[in-house]
Amino acid sequence: MSSETTNVAVGVTGLSGRYATALFDLADGASALEQVADDLRQLATMIEESDDLARLLRSPVISRADQSAAMLALLEKSESSELTRNFIGVVASNRRLFALSDIIKDYLMVLAGRRGEMTAEVTSAKALTDSQQAEIVAALQSSVGGKVFLNSSVDPALLGGLVVKIGSRMVDSSLQTKLQHLKLAMRGVG
Image: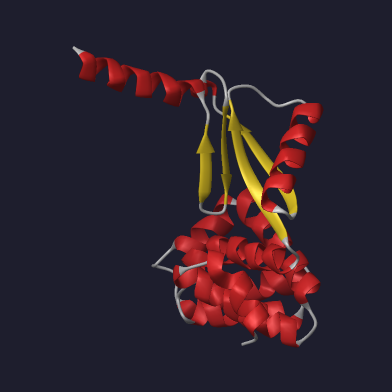
């Protein structure tokens, strides 16, 4: 494993991280990083859209052979690369399909790290406008020194402010958290 790959794999851990890193190394060696990423994105979409597929991945009742056959048929139908099909076959034969969504997420994270890209998870009380998102991206890019993509979500419980998470770093400037800190401080006064 090259030192460059080791450096980008720091953010992924556990079972899914090991599988994702192994797939990344295989795809890198075969010059198929983008093809595998496209295959995995397509597979992730299928998993999100099909409750039956999600059940197949999680079910301990379905045999290895049946899970492997079903996944192979699905991957052939979606015209996934041979590398992706073989890898998913190994995951299925090791009874690790339950971790497939996390493996996909970790692979894409390692690939983004290789490119110097980061994804910021931004939660706000209201949907952010395009200009607000652009301002956040600009601020984060100048802060971290790399390309940043925004994955935004809305949580009305925040009341106001933002919660921004990049990798293991989190900045919580939400009104909800500030009120909780104030409430705790007031309890300590009396």
